[in-house]
Image (cartoon, rainbow, N blue to C red):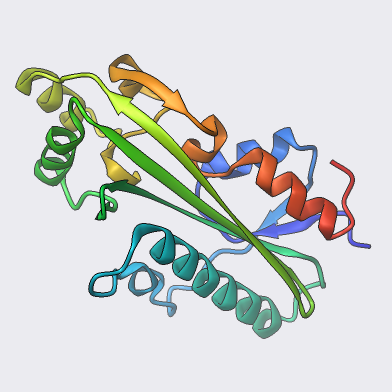
Length: 200
């Protein structure tokens, strides 16, 4: 049994959370030749849960192919993807400050879902899990939205906010998995790792 896994994610938060489980990992990131962004395109009328699980599976397919192409040591590969959904509307990563402000105004004073899918593959064995949490935002003034959007934190984050960052000042209530909202649900991830033979 390998004593480490590959994490196919650029997210420092996922790496940090994986470390909390006591699992050694090596990053398995996309080549410049890979079009990683195209994997995250939303299909017409796609439900958020279907979307996040499909994207995670595609990312895992790409990562396993990358592992084989590079001839790296055999070990399990872990992928995850997070999306924010307001009803059936999927809020991905904002394109810029203005897009971040638009998303934040949508979330202001509402309860939305944060869905994180996680999948693990070793050889032909593959398992996946889905974490769904609910987050309620307080009403945000235009000035608060603008200040947060201009701070740079929303960029690269689904739904234009980071639960572990300055946005916490606007979060009234959370129901579900805090680590899942951050990007890697610890409970579900630990279950997958145990299934692959790790002790967590």
